Picture: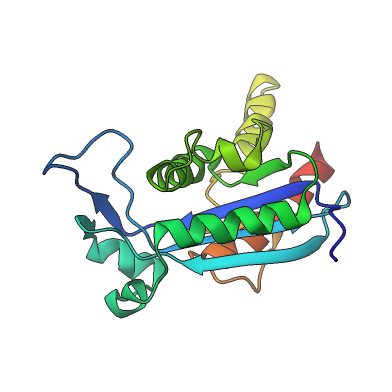
Length: 205
């Protein structure tokens, strides 16, 4: 049996379009489905195990062709993805397997990924949404960390160390730290890249 020695959980989602309910776009419902990925990390930020799943959107979800150009998805791949209910159950099992206490959740632009996962879990019958699974509100946003370091430099009259706080755009955090070998705009690739960026940011802090 796997020992529950997880300390941190990195998450990332790749999305493709918009959800419609009753013909209307609602606030928070403008994210389609493509993939969800995560990594359970130990207390030294080592990877214990990763999680990855393609997610098929429910009926009424628009798929944006421009989004598919960014993340490389095709309609055929999306159609082969698993349902909301199945991804939620598998993700819950992954978290239960590795964490005996609430993890510190890590993301690059974490509010986007949290909002999407919260919608998925809420739609699948979890009354407290994503919070029902992670059991807490402790999180670290690598984009926010980089912006904090930019602000610190600004207050000291120094140049910003991070001209771009994007993860994968040219000149962004991966370029700044020389992080290579992880496919950009793939959920698992961005999870693993976010881990390396976090380690570099913590060294600066």
